[in-house]
Length: 140
Image 1 (cartoon, rainbow, N blue to C red):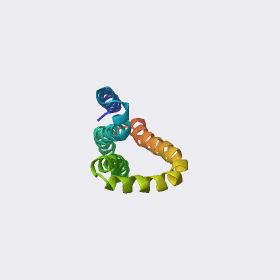
Image 2 (image 1 turned 90 degrees about the vertical axis):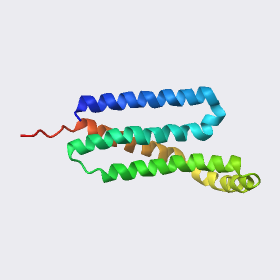
Image 3 (image 1 turned 120 degrees about the vertical axis):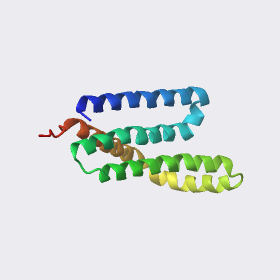
Image 4 (image 1 turned 45 degrees about the horizontal axis):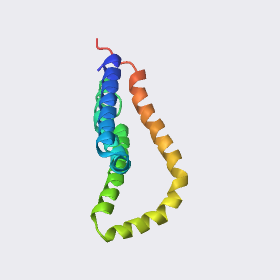
């Protein structure tokens, strides 16, 4: 996969993910989207963009395991987000226990969430940009 194909594939995939996310937002509403929509968009990104990045890294002869590990970590975070809210809304009175646990944990996590999200976005951008900046080895 050459650089123009890589960039075009990333762009088209990102647009498709944005359109799906917008359709979910419009179709299900802002409240539903805040619980599940972001997680769905992230999972689509992990699988869609991750596949493209891994193909590019293979073409460049770069190690793919750090990229795979990073995308697995991001996917686990999205699954936890959606899973928590699914359990909360579908577990009846047990949801109160989840709410209580969340009310204890969130004040401790809130100060570090934005720096962690910023770091995650920067690392993801670096992984994607690294694939665009390197040249495909020539044969011959």
